[in-house]
Length: 269
Image (cartoon, rainbow, N blue to C red):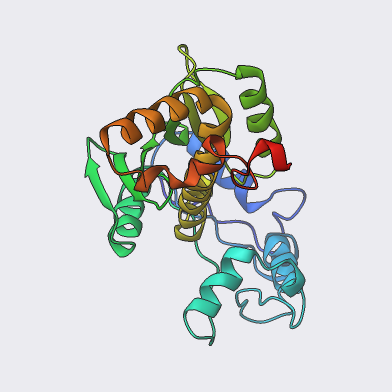
């Protein structure tokens, strides 16, 4: 077993750095130990790295760099501001995004806190039911894949009519949506879909995405029915009237059936 090479007093500083000496000895075989700096003048070169680090740290024992007071606060994210306000103020730290398997746990926690009905159908796969008003419920998939987080919600089936008008409406709505957009599948059924990087998934971001899905699916539902299913609605209305059935859940479409200003005698109009 080799011993550490002892540098000559006053020598060993001519271009020989500590790292170079260690690597040279390692190449020569045996177990090597860190080379000791030469006494006297040899300490100047051996301490170059230490001196640079000491100078950068302001001398003495280095401490973790502290951010400048008042700097960078303008760039604070909305997520941080929202969480700080929700927690009642005080000192808070920016939320760290989940990664990998952490996304699975994050989704579960967010859904539980929101008291949403869901089924976990494998690691990182959640089938969620979002309650609504116009659309009684919206079924939504949340899936953490290897490289991305996917959101997919069914909105309504393929329209019966006025397809061009329906698609025009969806395209215009896409310009105002956050994180998701409208699309259709191979048979023409309408969905909301979104995809983002795993490292972008945080508690606040997931809450924001679910809120957008619910707002769009529930808020646009009646409009889509009016445009793409007007004929079906009128037939259903007539059928219920003929059988004395309730029209309660069709009241939102009453304007499709009755004249806009009520029925007045044509001879008086």
